Image (cartoon, rainbow, N blue to C red):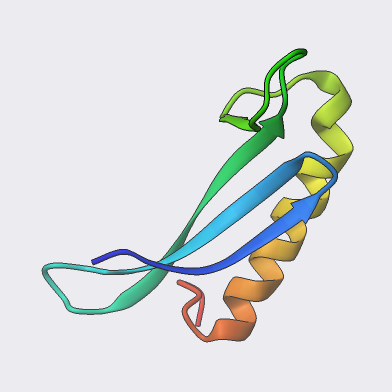
Amino acid sequence: MENQLHTIWDKSVGVRIRKQTNNTSGDDFCTFELVRCYKPEGADEFRYATTFTERNAEALGNVISKALSFIRASGLSEAA
C-alpha cells in the first residue's frame, strides 16, 4: 500500500516521496516521483506534469538531493 511521506519543492519542481512495502519480503522502502507545477495562461488552476526543460535542471538536482537525504534519514533507504 502506498503512503505519501513527504513532498519537497524547489520553485515549480517537486518530488513526492512514498513509502511502499515489498509484497514478497514485507520490507518497507521508499520511491520518489518528480513533478512540475505550472499554471497555463488564462487557467484558474495549477496543473502538474512529469516533463521538464533545461531551465528546471538546477531545481531537479536540488529536490533529488533533498529527497535522498530524507529517505536516508527515514531509515527506509535500500542502503540501510
